[in-house]
Length: 342
Image 1 (tube, rainbow, N blue to C red):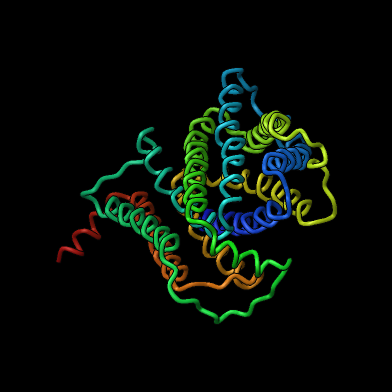
Image 2 (tube, one colour):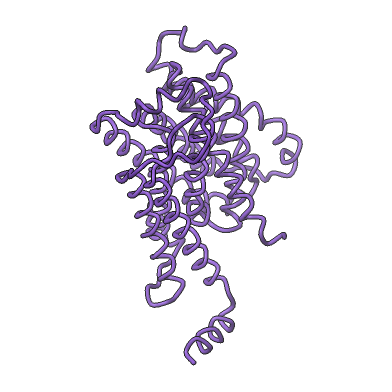
């Protein structure tokens, strides 16, 4: 069971992200400013993580060199602050399902960034390399199917019209193609920043292994950065007020569960399995988002969503098979090759 922990953790991470897609979209549709939203979620995450950091790692954490602090500052700025700000803009133009769909470009972006930085390798002549390549192509194909092919609707799920979202989701389906295309490109830019964050973390963690302090510091720096951006963009202080509504729920959830808990879990997974392993689990968030959108928010599932989701799952397991084969002892691989050749 211990060896399967990374697999269970990535499933939990993607389930948390699926809820983030839905709650964030609901908050933005109810008038929440995107830049203020990012500041609040980062500030709440910092407040949530700080006591745990002091209790578990403050005395054991190694001294942090100034150069390492500078690396973490810029990593937080590009990988968290800009990624979240740009993501929020893209989400306003699209829907929760489309946001989850475009996130599936993240494995490809992360893989190529990792190739450039020589963290990952791709040997086309080996079975593991072929499997990873097939999985990446399948992820692209699945995401493209979800984005460009709808097909007939599948009305086999019960719809609970929570938060009066049925009409808004139907309206999103008839949104102008120009706004949708703009949202997709903005989401792609956000995923590029996030992929860079995943890859560069691997270098910093090796030199500074205190994961909890590392995560808390990123949240703290990001909260300051996002505050400066939010103040520059939004001067109406009425927009900064939070009531007992979906906006407050989304901020608290994203601050504690996504930015606080999930970022730490991601750092742990990256240390254990590498950044591409984490990125390749993103299709799971899309599947969960589609099901939740249909059963909770009343969105009608199309045939394209089901087919695209199936292709994404096949691609995910193809890449995971290739990565697992790479970690097999060479003697075991030779025996399998001899057996398959008979």
